Image (tube, rainbow, N blue to C red):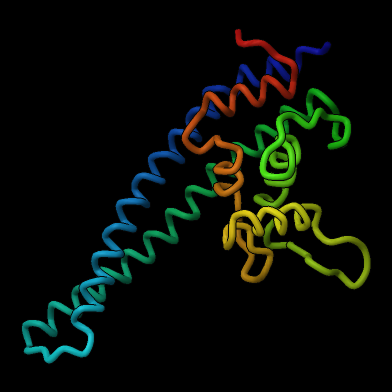
Amino acid sequence: MSTHATDYFNQVQSMLLSLHSSLLSNQIAKDEIELARQSNAGTLAMMDGAKLDDQDGTRLDRIRTKLQANERALETYDVLINVAAGGMLQIAKQIISMKNGPKKGDSPQGRSIAGTCLRDLIWHGRNQAMHYEHTNIAPPTGDPSTWVKMFQKLNAQYPHRFLMSPPYKSCAIDVLDVLGWTYSYSTLEQDMRSLIGATTP
């Protein structure tokens, strides 16, 4: 058995750990912003329709501004989180291809997850994360984008997380959640070693 894929995996461990750490840090920050957004939205809802004096009106304007800032921050964190998650899927897919070649069917499926398998979640998750803006659901000729069918099935199990309708967005973090990688780097490492037949160094 060629050790090239195993050697590469061992070499990129620090990069994967860095991406994973970035993902977790941004996820924690996003959760804090979401709590602030909920608080500001709740305050606005309570004040809606109430008779306000000038001081209350000024306070309401400040809360609206804060809420808008919360929403922009959440959008930014979504991008940062999905970039990190997409990078992790890219590296994982590269390792699989190094070991088994460029054809998905030549790689072992790995463990079963959510009605599909480890290999397909990595493979299609990476492709969707890298090319989601070119998603084609029902082209007049040819086949839809390779990830569409699997993502439609996943969306039936996890509603609103794998939507295949415009505006398209990366679902990389959702794929990592299904894989169990988001909060567990050890699961990622175990999965990758199982796919390339590598032991822990």
